[in-house]
Length: 205
Image (cartoon, rainbow, N blue to C red):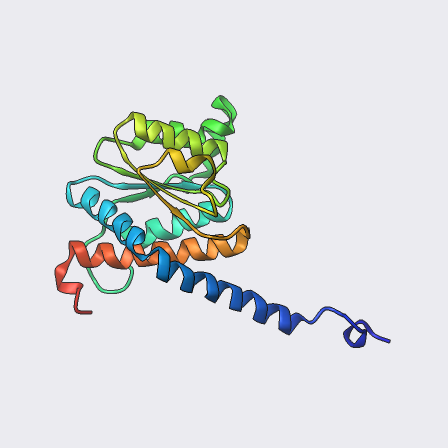
């Protein structure tokens, strides 16, 4: 008997459906329980940008890619035409990351980049599904020392980041993939609200 016909065999389509249902459930839960804090996060970012600050985003792996994705939404545009907004993904330069990692150790890569780019009035946005990544923790600590506003996106419980940021957005899941998917949805919502807070003419769009 082939695997596809064997009793108890893996059903790819059913698995895909379960993945998507789980993601949708998690997003609905965030919409119910997290909307107020997500709106607060957007207000924090908008306040920093309106005052002449910038957003500095960082994380590892998939979170590094999300940092670059969201920085591009601000420096480019999310949808409607508006002025570019200052944002830097600290994960974007392999030369910087490898030079700093080589000279100071991987745990210091984000702290060193915050030291280079961070100024009081900026907002640091840290992404870590576990909340325990040493280089993300060190980066956030450096941001706090330098007077930046701090925002962290994590998974369930928040890990060590929970006590280190001005605002922590926790996705109520222990599944790395679902957490990363939810982080992107949350940050897209933040981007939309930031646009409408900074450019009121977009609010009706």
